Image 1: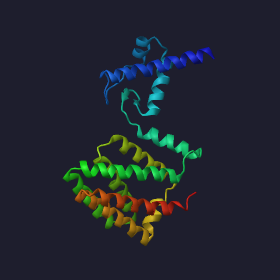
Image 2: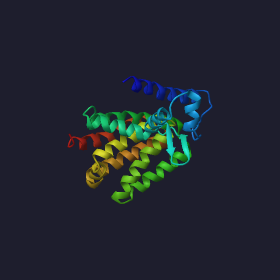
Image 3: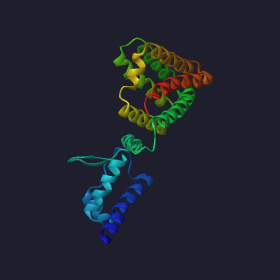
Image 4: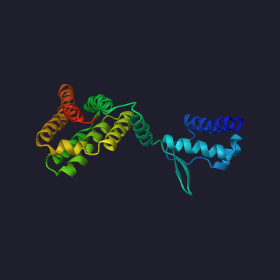
Length: 231
């Protein structure tokens, strides 16, 4: 028991050291961490404790372990968010409805910010994606639908919104693989969804937040109606 407590304290010591290095500007995204041996000697902890710390930070998305090349600071938190939310869903701590409610709020905020921040080039790109969305096959529509929403989030310049929306989208797709297909396969719901997409993109072109608010709520009204069948 005592050894386990000591090891726990040792591996948190490694994590705390990495945090301080990041805060001091000594470690930046993409840079290689000191080797296990160097960290062990520097901090006076066992290499097992260093490995435990690296595994923990790898799961968190802070570092990426590359076999034979060392450990690198990545800041890739999306996978961790997906896994955490997936477990919450499996443990009945969150529901489809709650995921959709959060997505609606974040998509709305992303659009409102994008209306202010999106460049003309980004808006032209979104117009093009939406044009393709209207004129492609169902399979391609699913891909383009995700691209449209992702690029709006990117245009918001808010990394946290981007990462959480991506995670929420992945979790939803993970447990309801056919939801997008079901919406797009039904002619009425597909037309309604496309009308919502048209209005979302139009709100960006016109920089019209009132139109954007209405369009997002129309979009998620369609999704929430379909979710009623998934309990």
